[in-house]
Length: 107
Image (cartoon, rainbow, N blue to C red; front, side, top):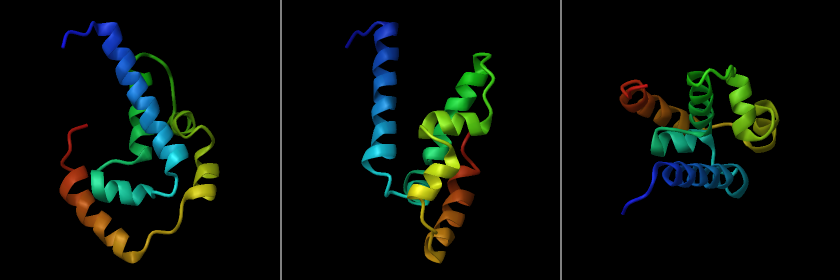
């Protein structure tokens, strides 16, 4: 399949927007710790990657600004509306997954 660079960028941006919608609007019930335990990334990772991409392009953006851009509201507001306390089991699973996967992953 032959796709020009601009079309590829537009398709990737559309896929990102759809992923964001899915995680933020369609499935806010899925907790970040569940995403981390299963996939090794979560909404906070996506917001950090967004912030890093902005910074790489000379656009100053703080961690909190990146989170607000991704979450569509202040992070603390989203957490209050959607996040629940993780069980001890999920926290233990996260500790193992984080040590095995996230700490070894290239940034």
